[in-house]
Image: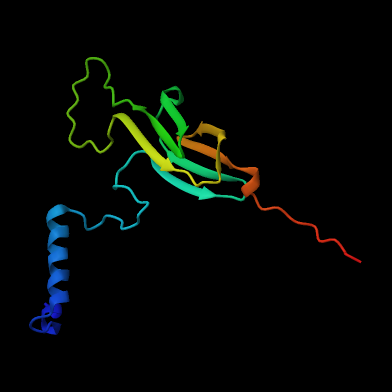
Amino acid sequence: MVSSLLRFPGDVFADFDELHRQLDRVLGTRNASSSIRAVQRGSFPAVNIGVTPEAVEIFAFAPGIDPSKLDVTVDKGLLTISGERSGYAAEAGAKVNVYASERSDGAFRRVVSLPEDANPDRVNATYRNGILRIQVQKREASRPRRIEVKDAR
C-alpha cells in the first residue's frame, strides 16, 4: 500500500518491477538464487566448492548413500558425481501411510565445472559420514612458488 503512494503516473520502471514480482509469484521463482553458478533449490547432492593453493575441493552432502553406488568422473574439465539413492523400505508386512515425502530417491547426477588449472589426472575421492570429499590437485605450473632473489654483485 505504501509503495503505491510513492509511485508517479507513467513510472515505467515501477511497472516493470511489478510485472517481475507477479511473474515470480506465478512461476514460483522468488527464492531462486541469481548466481550464475547456482543450481535449482533442492538439487542433490548439495555441494560446497572451494580452492586451496594446492587443490580444488568439492564437498558433496549425500547422507545414506552406499559408497559403492557413487560414481565420480572427470572429462573435459567437468567433474560428474552420479549415483543412486534408494527409497525408504518399510518392514515386511507393515502397513505404512506416507503423509509427506521430502526425500527423493532414485538416480541423481551433479556436474561441476573445474577451473583450467585443475589436474584431471590427480583426483582423490573419499566418503565418510554422508559427505563425499573430492580433491582435484592443481597443476604444478599453476601453483604459487617462491623465487629466490640473488645478489648480482
